[in-house]
Image (cartoon, rainbow over all chains, first blue to last red; front, side):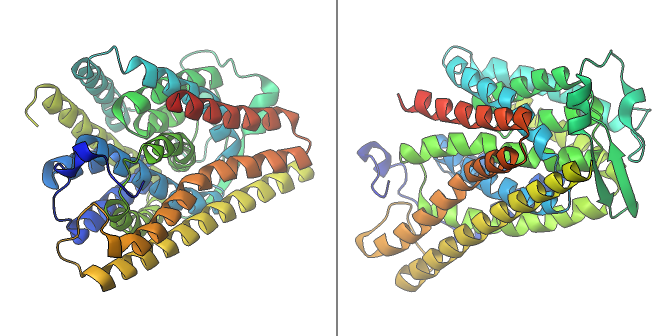
Length: 299
Length: 111
């Protein structure tokens, strides 16, 4: 791992700006942990476009940074009882197989088609998150929000129900988890996209957990962070094995991400869930725009 | 009901502790490695490729990265142990499935 393949020697003959790497990690960690995403959608473009790293090195570095981000956030959110660990583990049973399928499918699907499709999905989700009239109240059980019958078995539903103390509302919020089959399907899809596009999958998981499964926004963000830590660590271990992780690139990224993640978690815990939801929607719009620009080879 | 709540509490506490410990150890090693690197090479002109004199720094940082990457997997194992103690067969099975899928994913990628 300490030695590089000969073909990469010329590509990586560049001076590293440790401050730029640390700053990238700081921003990605802050936004990622506040919004329950991994931060890969920010890190990869910055590492390739601004810092001129080869794409596979950027993705590998990004995956490690995502793991650091998610672990930092998960440690804090879980202690605050925001993370629904049981739900996270349940949804991971669909996400990881999705990631395996996605990895296999990556060889046959044109990346430009994927980027365009992904952008369309993001636009729809972003629109829903920002404009939905019926905003889920954070202190109401979610059973009435469904548009389709809930097929979650009763014993599973009661096992997954959870509560946490909301600092902003200054009270305990209790919620039920519904539409688990839909959540599993969406998690599988998130896993497929995660492998195909090198992202954590939070941009799918958070809206689905919030809009469909009945989790308040903060619980959805926290649970997503827990799930992303598990999903992306597998990908990162694979890159590590093939020697695509360079310690001097990753080290400042990790430091920046951990600091940013701590700040982001503080924001998420104190902010109103509705505000987080709208910020997330705007974030998705921007990501969708980047995806379309990338598809059109503008960036 | 009380037993369920105390099981949940224990799960949250141990998983949280595991993540925090993993991040703390990993971060400490990364910072130490970076300090060694900066003391040997200064902040300017650092290349991704490791020079001979930079090997100690690279080793320390690499161990930190490995600990970071293993942290989430260890938390799944912690969950397996706690669900086993609580005799929660449903989530014990789910946690074992997650670990198995992760292992399969690794094996497939490495073939």
